[in-house]
Length: 513
Image 1 (tube, one colour):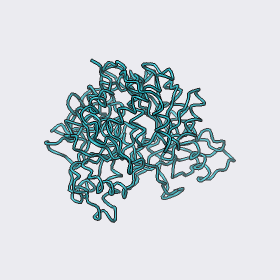
Image 2 (tube, rainbow, N blue to C red):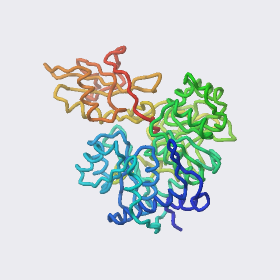
Image 3 (cartoon, rainbow, N blue to C red):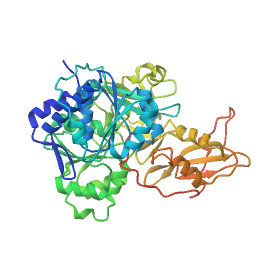
Image 4 (tube, rainbow, N blue to C red):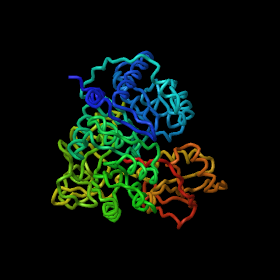
């Protein structure tokens, strides 16, 4: 049996060919049109010499071209390497080189960064954009031969990271994704072809990819795309198209709940909302449900788990503040530093085992072995489990910062700071923020006699990092606190009140973990 994930599109197109699969503004693409366009992309790829197992990059926002390219790559037997559209050239170059990408599709506004990064790695870029995507992607004859892929073959490489090195590519298989889609789309949300989802989550990330795009394609539902989340536009789409399911991160729910004119819009057809990426404050959950008349279910997952691992499930008790219970076929437990399972109520690391866990990290056997100790994926998240088997995340073991749903990895920023001629030492930490959950802060010690301002260092980082990463708060210290081995003690770092603060700028749709 061919387990190629693209069979979902082919099968659904045969049943719901005339139904819209994605909408953007006034444009609607039917299942039949998406299936045809993806076959033409497969033809383009085979003409360019892309073979089964080759990695193909995609740096495209939430526009119809994304699913066209995504399923075209899968049809040809390639491996999809999605990239954040906010990446700068240096970052793109790393991903392209690490994954061995030889061909990268880039949206017009991403073209400069894509070409800079791809050029560094010797890869080719195909630019697509408004008004030209149809010509570029539809010029080839369709190739309807569907590459044979097994459940254990890699379908997508999603880049993620921790605090101990460069970003790593999590290999998600056709089987990982298919099973996660089946369980999350059908079993957890009761999604049907009558549903209309609001696609505010980035499709280049696992949450939007699995729970929005792929789940819609599997069931014949429709997906309204938003290239950048905006609360007013979201309410307009809910009203205009009768959105039935909304999936988002807490900052989105906060923005919708506090929209000054939300009562002007008809959101009565909204039946279910899914929240992930960070803990949803109980007061926001309750206020949103009262205002919108729709149930919010919280879940938990990571890029390495396809992503859904646990969920507050329909028809079961829901506990606000909890990430629910493990989904079907998945085991979770809380362990201590030695891997011993802890009793209910005790805090330890969440470990996960099941069909959703990645194949491994691309070309990183040591990192894979470390993450999969004892056959369980070690999440790096600290949690407790109650007597009923519900899990509650309490902290992150890793130093990763979660800013408005975006993962920010301190080491990447610190390494750039160390390259600045005035900087002696630097430590990047997460600071509590009411709106974003966490803000990025940096404590810096300058070299003797050197001079630099917070604005100067922020500008230096802003030119080299995606907009959501660079520190809005920077302050200077004589030296950073250290332990007996000389390691910087981040837990001992305290930020001065409102010093070195730059107002946050819009950075697009928040990205769940």
